Image 1 (tube, rainbow over the protein chains, first blue to last red):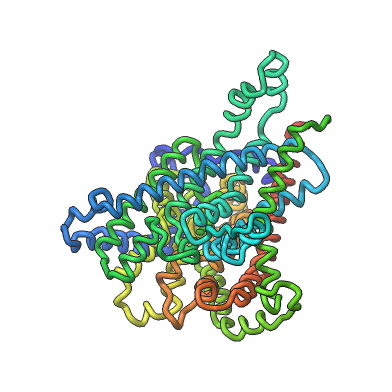
Image 2: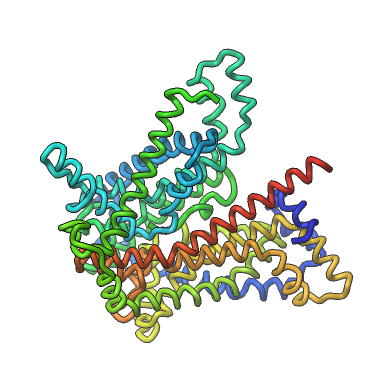
Amino acid sequence: MSSVQNIQEGRSRPSFPFGFLRRATPGAGSPAILALLMTPGIIIVAAFFLIPLALVAMRVADGPDGWATYFVILTNGRYFASLVQTLLMSAGVTLTALILCGVCGLFLVRNRFAGRNMLMALLTLPLSFPGTVVGFMVIMLAGRQGVIGSVTDALFDEKLVFAYEISGLFIGYLYFSIPRVILAVMASAEKLDPQLEEAARSLGAPTWRVIKDVILPGLMPGLVSSGAICFATAMGAFGTAFTLATDIDVLPMVIYTEFTRNANVAVAAALSIALGAMTWAVLFAVRCFVGSSADTAARGGA
Amino acid sequence: MRRDWKFYSQLGLTVLLCLFIVIPVGMSALAGVTVNVFKGLSSGLTLRWIIEVWDLYASSIMLSLWIALVCLAVTLVAGVPLAYVLVRRPGRLTRLFEELLTLPVAIPGLALALALLITYGGVSGYRSSWLFILTGHVLFTLPFMVRSVAAVMSAMDMKMLEEGAASLGAGFWRRFFTVIVPNAKPGILAGALMVVTLSIGEFNLTWMLHTPLTKTLPVGLADAYASMRLEIGSAYTLIFFILIMPLLIAMQALADRGKRASKRIDTAEDTL
C-alpha cells in the first residue's frame, strides 16, 4: 500500500447529489468505457431482477380478485393475522437483541479482563450460519433432546420443549441477530468519548441520566442500523422456520405454503411483494436516518 | 479500576449470552461424533456419521463449492468495474442504480426466488441446471462485492493516482488493471470472502430454486435435519463448520489488519 493511499483512507465517501451536472472527472475513462464497465452489472440486474419483478407484479392480477389481490394481506383474516404475528415477533426479537447486545457490547468495549477476546470471538461465531443451521441450534437448545429440556427434566421433572413453535423461532432469530448487533454496538461504543461521561458525572448527573443523555445518543446510529437488519431478517427469513416446523404461521412460511402446496401463485406473489416492500421500506427509512451503507454492512440470510 | 457488583453482573450477562451461542454449537459438534446421542457420550465416539454424510451428500457439498467459486468469478467481473463507475462518477443515475442493485439484499430471498421461478421456470434446460441457482446467488451477493470494493475505492485518491498514471502515458485499461485494481485489493479480498461465505450458506433462495439433481450444501442440511437421525444432521453441521471456519478466520484477520492500518493513519495525522 502506498503511503498516499494510507493517509487518504480516513476520508469518508463523497456526497452524491447532482454529480452528473458536474464536469466529467479528469482521468476517468471516456463515457463509452464507463458504460462498457457497467454493462455486465446492468445486464444481471435487468434480466434477473427487474424483469422478474415486473412479471411477478403482473402475475398478481391473475388472482381470484384481480388487482385487488394486492390487498389480500389486509383483507384476508388469516394472512392479516400472520402479518401481525410476524411483525410482533420481529419487533420483539429486535428489541431483545438491542437491549442484550447494548449492555454486553458496551461492557466488552469498556472493560479489559482475561478472556475478553475469547468472549468476543465466541459471540460473533454464528455470523455466517445459514438459517437452517440456526434452526438446528435451536433444536439443540430447546428441542426434544435439547439442553433446556434435560436441565428442566433433572430439576423439576418436567421437560421444557419449545423449539417447534413461534418461541423457538424467536430464539433462533435472536441467535442470528446477536453477533450482528454486538459488532455494531462495539463499533459505535469505541467512538464514544469517555470524557463526555466524566463531564456529565462531575456535574452531578445520576447514572441513568448519563446513560440516557450521553451513552445512548452515541450508540444510536449503530443500534438503529443493526436493529433494522434484525427486523428485516426476522420478517423475511425462511430457513430457520423451515427447519423448526412447517406449520409456524409466519409470513414467509405462509407464502411458501401458498406457492408449493396450494399452487396459489397470484396470492403468493401478492404476499411476497407486500413483504418485500415492507422490509425495504424499513431499511430505507433507517438508511435515511443514519446515512449510507447500513443494510449491507452486516447482513446475511437466515 | 474498582470492580463492583455492576462489573460482575454485566460480566455474568455477557457470559450467559456467550453460553447461549456456544452450547448448541458444541452439542451439535459432539453429537456428530457420538455413537448414539440418546445414550450420550458413554456410547463412545465415532467417525461413522461423518463418513456416512460424505457418502450421502458429497455431491451437494461439491456443488456448493463449485457454485460459490463461479459466483465469485461472476461478481468479480461484474462487481469491480461497477464499483469503479459508482465511485468515479457519482450522480443521481448511479445512485439510483446502486439502490436498485442493493434491493435484492433487502427483499426476502423467498420473494426473489418466486420472481425467478415465475419468469424462467418454463425454460427447462436452464431451470433444471445449477446455473439457475447460480443466478440467485449472484443477485444476492453482487451488492456485497460492490459495496466492499467501493468502500476502499472511495477512500483512496483515485483521481490523483489516475492522473499520475495518465501523465506517464498509461491508457485507460492499463491504468485500470495496474493502478486501480491493485490499490483496491483489500476491498476486493474482503468482498470475495463475503461472497464465497454467503454463497456456501445461502438457503432462502436456493431451497426454492433447487431440483432433486441440483442440491447444495444447505439444501442437503435441511434434508438431513428433516429426515435423517440426529447424529447425521449433527455430523453434516460439523462438516459445514469445518468448511466455513477458515473463511471466517480470514475475514476476521482482514478486518483486524484494516483496523490497524487506519489506526496508523490516525497517529500519522496527529504528528503532521
